Image (cartoon, rainbow, N blue to C red):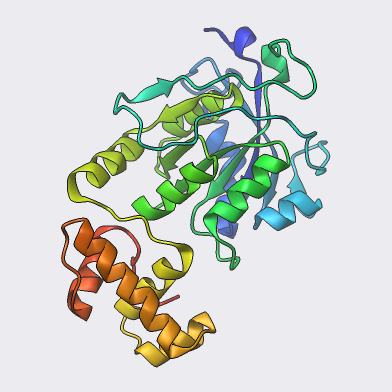
Length: 278
């Protein structure tokens, strides 16, 4: 499918890494036909960057050259949000996206804008909350991270994100995911496929946001009372979160009875990436 048929892929980037935001346009657009790089038939245009979803949707984002920062018009999305997809890497079709209230298929130039969102935003909001806010505003959502976290990827997929891509030196995989999202299609990257396979093979339990955060804090070395203070709940409530985490890992066939075992599970599933809480 050629460049003219695909049209321009409009992307808003949400990431709280200032260095990445400064260079994201050059990095994502390096394969564009006029960039001098190896063309992939796609033309990506970064229309805005923001450090949080709220900044993007409130108009506090930084627009690309000569482009407005206002959110795009709302679109109606019809898609299968399940993440337990076949492991064929590449495009996986989902129902078409149609701009509301029209019923005919949109032309390629009318493709939905895409939000590329980092999964580990330090904004105090749940991944699902951010994904749903972007979808409500009219964006198709692609998530990314430097660390594969099966729980976060699963939560984002259930909330409506179409794809997950790991950040890397090469932008090709991410450009393909963005192009698929603009068409209302899912793109299964190598890293996403590996997470799905790992979840099937090792039984990654589905934790709630509070359970995940309690596990992260406790596994990082904090006491139960410190975990409760961080979560702003009673100590008994924090303990109940961890008890449910233990039960879910037990049901998944992966013991997590002791604090050391909980830490092992947290590291294995990407819940804990550093020895200390952020």
